[in-house]
Length: 68
Image (cartoon, rainbow, N blue to C red; front, side, top):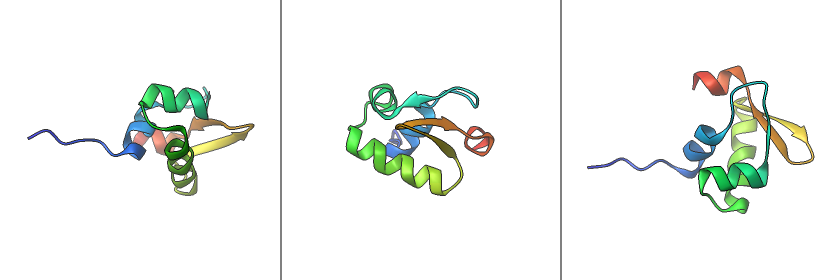
């Protein structure tokens, strides 16, 4: 049985390492997740301290996100 990743897990996996950032659209494309769902998941990840919003819809992974 294959375990499927949630949208949030796919998005976290699609993020570049800390120090680099991507736009919401680029993250959605890389994760193969709808842009609306990507934005919602990024907000959840941001509130948990796993990603940082840099403004203008750009995000980067935090050290906590990388360790997750």
